[in-house]
Image 1 (spheres, rainbow, N blue to C red):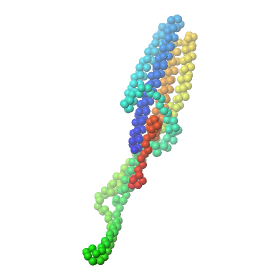
Image 2: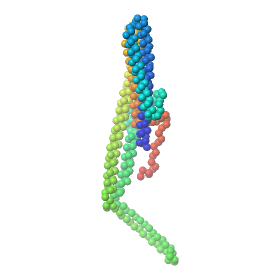
Image 3: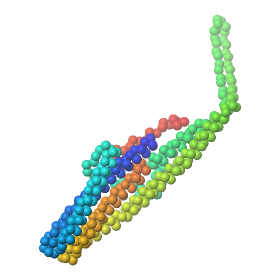
Image 4: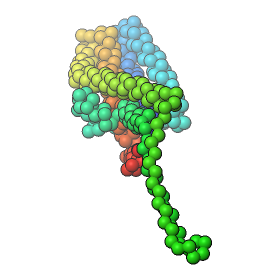
Length: 321
């Protein structure tokens, strides 16, 4: 059951990550289309000023070149979007038309890496498999504990007869037998079996420790990515705000002849580059959240639209023996 859950969580992440790829490329395409519209406005302004003798044909060519570059960038992003859609279709046999924003992890995400690590033993499907394997070997080892010991048996029997062969009267017979058995010559099979299981126990201990270290390391790496993405949010937002103000100021100064078309185009390019960086950071943040939830067995519950996994079926009392 834990192995099935681990596989479900892995599939959930693969699909969610592919969907995030579609969403990223879709947003980048929208930004490229917005940049094309902005450069077209600049091109119209430069063309009008050129007709009025306020600028040169070289400035018009510069704006046209920038427009061609952005159009080329749009084609690249559209191609990347199509590749992302096909990658999603390979996993789901469904071609997404337009990707919507994905849910944030919210309260399902532990507040820190240390808190998440403390939950590994109870929530990680990968670690739970190793724990159950270890428990199974413990049971096997215990079942071999008495195979090399002597066996003591007690047998009691009695007969009661009344006129069985005519008027013979009553006859009562009782017997008791104590047996003692010991396997002197079994080729060391029982001992060898115990040694073999003991070796597997040591291997299971190693595997359990290795998986715990791996899951903990992966979670801490994901939280480091989360921290970096969160720290970038404020910086990128400030960069966008500053770039937007500079672009608007340069437009006003360009109309007054105090800025060149190069300054104007560079300001617009910086603004849209900052917006693209913001989009990529948002996707990276969401992907890091999903990786943590996958390792703690909570991603499917988040992305399944409220359809949780069924509870684990526990063995009946005494069945483990």
